[in-house]
Image (cartoon, rainbow, N blue to C red; front, side, top):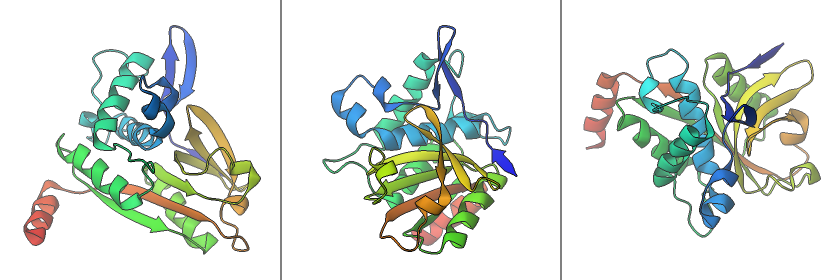
Length: 216
């Protein structure tokens, strides 16, 4: 069985130029180099906004939501929340917190689930598949994975939007391209790898208020 969330197909004129956003669209050199987290955050915001689950405030474009011009505005806004440092943005906890803050400031209350270094393939796939089945895209961080197939994706955020159980593949948005990756390659217990995942769930305003009181 294959499941895939509706990732925005970004257009320029009449041409489709992206499955989700692409950090190469940023104007700044460092943004293009290290802006992958903000692209993933933008993809998640856009998917949620179009989901019909009361999260429209996460992405409110002035015109066509799939136009490159409008999507780049979202990416620039998200970059303001997810500014990378000299080592980039390789922290799942920070990603979760920054996206929750972005959402809260727009009246959308979320909680995050995180997983880092998932050595058990079943637990990793359960985390991903449960999220996709619930309509929640997965922010996925790849750090120093030894596979040569991931040479260009190391130290990088992508957005998992689906999976194919028959082919044992995950589907993701990576630099504006729809890609597929074998989950046996990605979660290989016989190799040393570093990956992390974040997914979000809606929380009620009351739950958020109670959490704020507890923290305070």
